[in-house]
Length: 98
Image (cartoon, rainbow, N blue to C red; front, side, top):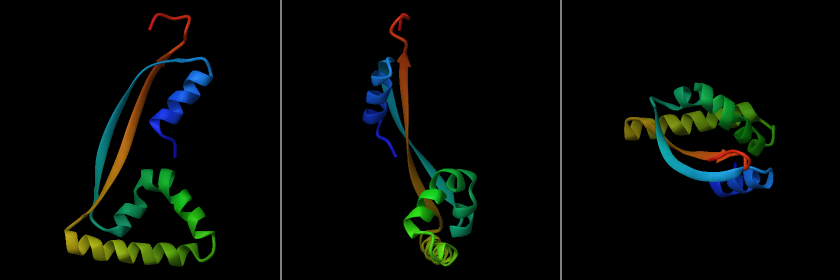
């Protein structure tokens, strides 16, 4: 994952002029571990990395154990909450008026 600063540096390295940045945090709420692991954005943006961490060995059993642990947490807390940082970078080409 990248930071806003590293993404801004990459944009400038490729000739764009960074005008500004905005930071936000989204709260995603889930009923239980199954709901969290089935969510489209979790499967798209997080699950592949988690599977890499698991090393590909017994990935299904590791995810089952994770789901069970999340279910316990959801029962205790009434829900699962995931804080997702969001960064927006605004940039323009140097030849254009920003």
